[in-house]
Structures are given as C-alpha cells and as structure tokens.
Amino acid sequence: MSRIRPLAPLAPLLLIALTGCRWLGWLPWVGDDAPDLPAHVALSREALKAIREDDDLSDLCARAAAQTALAHPEAGVAINDIAIAVIDLSRRRGPHLGHHRGFEGIEPGELIALPLGVEAMRQRVEGTVTEHQISTLLSQSLVHGDSPAINTLADLLTNTTSGPTLIGPGLEEFVQGRLLVDRSLQELGLYGICAAHRIGVPTGRELQLAERLTPSSNRMTAADTARLLFLLAAEQMINPHRSGQLLSLMERPLGESTDPILSRLPRDLPDRTLIWGLAGWSDGANHAAWLITFPNGHRIALAVFVEGGSGDAALVREAAEAMIRGL
Image (cartoon, rainbow, N blue to C red; front, top):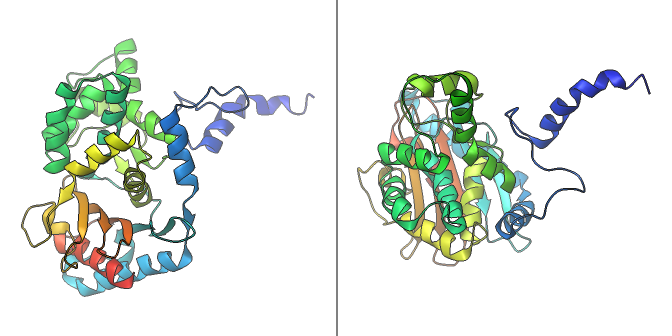
C-alpha cells in the first residue's frame, strides 16, 4: 500500500488529463455516483458519439487546404495555416467527420458567437435569461457578427462585466464566472472551445483573465465548430425549437457580396441550395462555418479556418468550394 501513496497527490491531475479539462477549478462528474444528465445533454452526447472519423474525408480536407494555399502564393499562407473540418450528415451509416488540423484551437474572432448563441438558448430554456435580454444581442451577433454585441452577450451569459483590475475573491469570482460557457460545452462533450474572453485587446480585469487562463484568448477548433452546426441541424442542441431559432438567424442568401460574412460563402452553388453560416475576421481571424443543404438533400457541416496571410475572404471561400467539388 505504501508504494502507491506517492501517486495520491497526482490524482486530480490524472482526472483532469482523462476528462480533457483545461482549468483546475472544475472537474466533470465521473463514476457511478454521477447525477442524471439533463435530457438535452444526454441527446447531444449520443449524437456526437454517432460521428465517425473518415480517412477519405480527411484526405479531401488536406487536398482542399493544399489547393487553396497553392492558388494564392501572394497571401503567404501554407497548407498548415489552414484548418478544415467537414461532417457529412447524409451517409447511410451515420454522420462522418473528416478534418485537416481539425482539433487545433485557433483564435475565432466573431465566430465565437456560435457557442455563445447555444449557451444563450440553454439559459433561455432554463429561465436564467429572458427573451427580451437575448433577442437583439443574438440577432446582432449571429446575423451581423457585431463584436460589441458579442462581448455584451458574453457578459450577460456569464454574469460578469469588464472594468478595472480586481483582487482577491472578486477576481476569482470573475474568472470562474467567465468559465461558465466553457463548462457548459464540456458537459456536452465539446472540449475544443474556449469562450471565456472578449473580442479585442484585453485591459483591466480582462488582462488579468488572459494572464490567469490557458489559452489566453478565445479558441475554437474546426472540428467542434462543425459539430455544433451538426447538433443544430440534427435538432439535438437544447431542443428542436431553439435549434431552429438559432439556425434561422444564420440563414444566408446565395450570391456575391462584399459583406464580411457573405463574402466568405462558397459561390456557384446549385439553385435551391440552402445555406446557414457565420464568419470571423477580427483579432487575426479569417474563418467561416456553414451548414449546407443541396437540392438533392445532401447535407454537410463545414468549417474553414485560415491563420496568417492578408485576411482575404477568398482564401476561406475557395477552400470551401474545393471541399464541395470533392464531395
């Protein structure tokens, strides 16, 4: 027995490693004494478990990244500056996932509105926030990608406010409050998203937060971005009504545009194609994610993240177009 005592202090760290938790302040329930899961959590977990990784789809993602980088040498973007994830929802044996750098956390910019929107709907169903509080903020965040609205929504959902530096219990309460959205997503099985920070240069207590947490800014993975869209499409996020409500805010028209969101949408899609999506372009981001339903009923969730370069929307758009041609 004495031989295993030295391992006891490592038990919390081992639990953190096994559960994927990034912050020492929280551990998910494990073991036989875990409480009953809320219905929406159980449904979301089951839906995510049904996704199978597909080597052919991953090869397609890598080829699309390579084609895009080679087509734009002036952008100074290499293949490993591009992350792509796709979930094919129409496979007979269930949804399949392919990715290139799909599980690497990347600064998302305005794309962080997607997980915040999911959390807003969860809190609305639970009665923590009201329709009046979130309706305008969700519209501004998801329809227009408005950064101030996204930051205000984050404050509302975490019951925190930006301001001067804090000390002692006040700072700890602020830090723990900002982790609320991350914990909610981790409960669903989504560990590749950090939504604890505001968009923009941190000051005051936001800078303290950046110094306390790892990562020090928001992060999303292409894979978990596609998974969120998949859950909304499958109506397994919160409930069917709220899933549909979120998607309705992200529905986009086909055609060319200079709008920062619409300019990243794939072009030349068949008539009667339906597309929902949003994008990120601040804090060095050049990303977009879409749920696409083709006229034949084929449906995909697709996320493209581009790091570095000039921020040219064409890089994201053409990577998506390469994926669609391959499919």
